[in-house]
Amino acid sequence: MIYTGVDLIEIPRIAGVLERYPERFLAKIYTPGERAYSRGRAPQLASRFAAKEAVMKALGTGVRGVPWKDIEVTRRPGHAPEITLHGRALARAEKMGIHRMALSLSHSREMAIASVVAEARDDAWRP
Image (cartoon, one colour):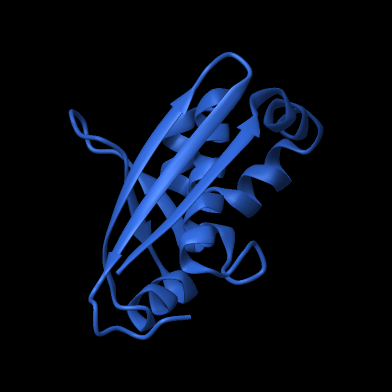
């Protein structure tokens, strides 16, 4: 079974929220690791925001189903970005039988996009 999610977001929208509510926005949405990696750069924050929404779509929960920081985008040097799930997001993925997620991120000057493909066992529970 395959689950997918995709999200597209305007980078200036993220930059505007970051400018108006910097600490509140960062603390609510991003893990310490994501904050360190992004260093306040709007394109990186936007692509990670889109990734979190894409994961929520793949999990079938929407933005109210799991906390933002239960979905973390990590990146090891020399490797593609990866999704690490925590808390309720991890519990939901386990219930769905998801054992692997692939993530692709991209951005231009104005837009950031994320695509997620989640693979689950064929005999797993379905939402």
